[in-house]
Image (cartoon, rainbow, N blue to C red; front, side, top):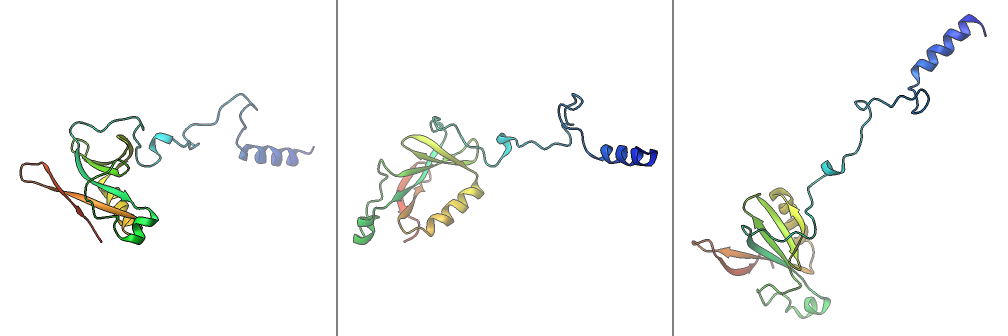
Length: 147
């Protein structure tokens, strides 16, 4: 190989980063981006966690069957049933908790909760109820948020 050809090859080879195992060196961690699953979006709670003692019941979401929608009687009772998803406000962490069967299934920031409510409004098979708050801080009657 001529001297100019050798210089060209060595310049080209220096532009290619070394592969792992070629010289035993690992790629630089500062240049490689790794996906950290703990920072990928909102924090989800462990599905076995219970509702904290300081949380208060904010409302519930009822999923109606087709028969209840057609009869128009799905939203007449404003008391939470066992199959309804309950919404709790975690006072300490300032988060909304979506609870089904007494287990937290989602943990929402106030902004995420607003989006959650907007999406619920477009679904005709679900009704959102909100509990009124009394002056003493206790939970009052449940009111249908929209009809």
